[in-house]
Image (cartoon, rainbow, N blue to C red; front, side):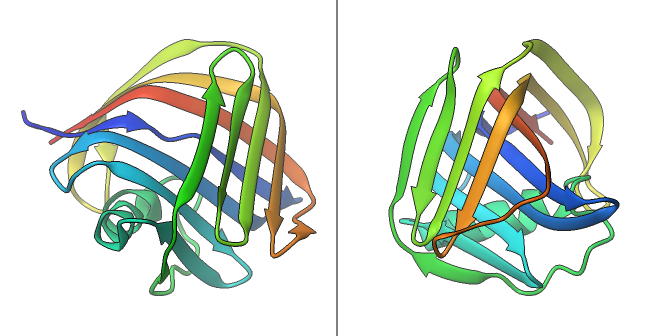
Length: 166
């Protein structure tokens, strides 16, 4: 089994009832087979957007990982609009995360718990991966796109010490 990625991947969903309004997946890649860096992947309003100073890394994260996450499984996944721009990342595992990239800002605060999650067969579109991460559900999450808050029922979490193996 080979390690493909080491880093962090906090995220949040915004729903209205059963309808998914938005999913934000924020990546800090400390090491991967495609390099290191930061990226923000956003599924919202019928579009998929990737913002990263390393577009190749951001695109890989969106297509290889994020598009297969349970949060967006079954949703239309249009080809991502890739924006080359820096991602600002401020994280304190005792407090939360603030990340912003282009016109998107994700804020996640109030960790309620910390637990190690290990999935021996995480399905990435027909490819099984071992995933281990420290998962921290959080009390509050806000998502702003182009200066407008995306409102609804929010489920936000921090995920750090994340390792993906194939």
